[in-house]
Amino acid sequence: MRDNKQLSETHPLSSLDVWEDDLLQRYPDPESIATAKSTEEYRNYETPGRDSVREFYRLNHQYQTFDFVQQKKAEFLSFDKKEMSIWDAFQFLNQLVDDSDPDTDLDQFQHLLQTSEAIRADGHPDWMVLAGLFHDMGKVLCLFGEPQWAVVGDTFPVGCAWSDKIVYPEFFRDNPDYQNPQYQTRYGVYSPGCGLRQVNLSWGHDEYIYHMMKDYLPEPALYMLRYHSFYAQHREEAYEHLMDEHDHEMFKWVRLFNPYDLYSKNPTPPDWTQLRPYYEELVAKYLPATLKF
Image (cartoon, rainbow, N blue to C red; front, side):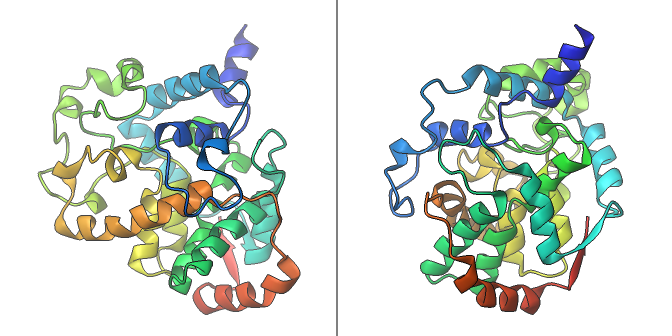
């Protein structure tokens, strides 16, 4: 029984992408980017893993405490685990190929490439194209032994009251922070309009890739990376009271980016032979030869 419990805490979902299935059911988007098929056809499981999604969020909401977030920042934001060239990093990420994804049998890099190509096709700035290429790179945390609930999932502030707009808010009752009166007030450890740069969000691939890229990309791209899973705000507007005017301006970019993330998958793989010169030049324009993980 103990082994089964440990296994469920490590692998509550059948795949990392089941979380995106749940997102697409909660937040259907316009058809403009989903050119291969209608949005209704995306993430179409005959028997969607709803129970596994609930179990995922039960674990996520139980263990994502204020102290846990601080511990993970200390553990991973020193970036002392591995150093790789940009292209070796994508090969490393490709160890997360997901055979159970019903939308594509492409590897992680090709999914990211489809996202960036959809952004490029619409004429957006090249730094936004690069944000599309790197937005899920933080999922390498799984390859460092992190459980799924500490890598993917909707993000939310810790250290203050949880909004009922967060998916499955009832599971927060099992979170130790539920017993801390300070963390259960509207502002918690923060102050009105303090700005999201002062706010700690639940730990995952968004925060990790933001810190990896923060010295290299323009601020709108960094907002896209850091907050693309913060659905409680960019879809539900549940944390207006913590945001400042600069956040509101930057979230226009976050909302612009989100549909490209969710709806760019296409069964036809990108022609990497043709695209490679463009992306090698683009990566060299903004990033160093190697990245630290």
